[in-house]
Length: 321
Ligand code: PMV
Image 1 (cartoon, rainbow, N blue to C red):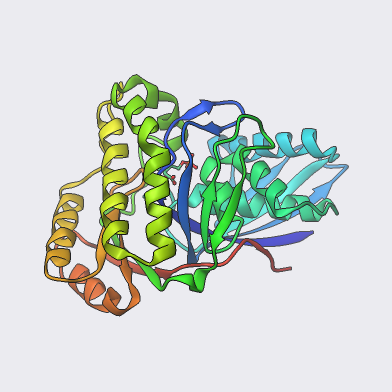
Image 2 (cartoon, rainbow, N blue to C red; image 1 turned 120 degrees about the vertical axis):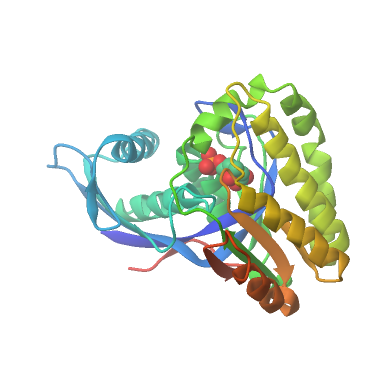
């Protein structure tokens, strides 16, 4: 029996759409920061005599879609690593699921690392990222520490994630404006499959490598101005693809737009803050530590913002028991 704890992550350069749906090879490379303290903790025990996989999620026995997705990931691990038997999986999140704080990233990172460790196997970090990717693409980025790049790759082995800088490299903080805690109607898994129905996806993918290079250079140089420009542009591009897909995906709520607008105004006033959004309405306001308090207070006083979560750059997925 093993327990792993994985942080969620927020992408600065987004993953949206697959080159290969089955292997979850992404259409473009991506870059993210792990989110300290927003985590999933998962315990796995393998049982050769069990009749099926079992999942307990946040204290309740899960069936249906959640169990199916976990079981399919366990099938992939069983097949690739020759593991026998079924698994008992107990998993808890300490943040709301399905609302733009990537719960699938931390969930599949923790599940993969706990399942491999519980089977008595010892794999490299790189291999663990490729296996986590099969469960949820962004999960690959929650395994290494700090700031993480996920390479596209043309095969299972080549599509891995690695750290480009430790968490303390740059004191960035994600101040998350929660505008809705509701579970999103369309999962990112479904969204990836319709990305190509937007005429804009090709353009977004073509420019992604360059945006990633600019973002990575800005991050390594701790150049907030460059960083803010490319992070907001990349998020806007992904949402433009979502809104122009068939069927269209609109994740923004009125409060989402109000926060985005406020962030731009704060930046004009000299605060080092920019926004990025995942597949949900909550706004991740990325700022330098010295401006985080003002951003957080300002967000709390906005109508439509129901909660504010603050998270610094986080470490890697760890075995904790
Ligand atoms: O890992 P998935 O399939 O949940 O996809 C994540 C997609 C985004 O969160 C919208 C972007 C990203 O790169 O994390």
